[in-house]
Image 1 (cartoon, rainbow, N blue to C red):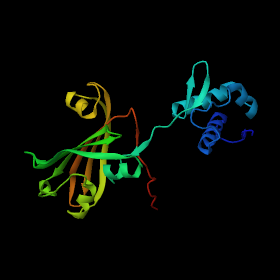
Image 2 (tube, rainbow, N blue to C red):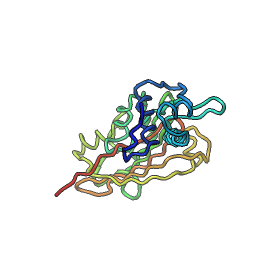
Image 3 (spheres, rainbow, N blue to C red):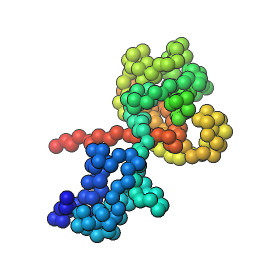
Length: 234
């Protein structure tokens, strides 16, 4: 049960990894109390400050929570939605195993800047969690307003109707306070902080041909992004 004192990995990090592995394995279930700092210090032959560093790290990571006067407990992890990939919003919810409904607020409407505007929101258990506004370049997506967008994946439409595949995307992230209209759509109070994602999607024939603004409530779900290592060329 001892930790490796010769490892370059700090002891507190080794302990944090050990506790995380125990949580993942079900040794400590959600809402279970983990051993006290004294018990962990004795079990792993380390000092209490090292134990505190390890549990502090897991608290920051959202794996543990401290309850005053009771101890440290395994925290329930919020469901995660990998929203930020090029697969699109529909695919993100489908892959999350959540029973989500994408509701079309306004179909494709042509604007004076030669773009089509589409607005949707996502609901889980009848509660709105996401508001999405998209702007399509009308030259690349002609007659978008002629298509029925209800209950349809927009990523699939781009591929199957316009024969286009996104090559890359630029994304920026910020926190904004919900205005009155946004608050009404997301069923929150005006001024509630929201995660805002702005995405510009590039296609081979046109850069910045599709822009998406996504406003997310983060009080019920974590919105994540899967990252892959870049390839190394020699």
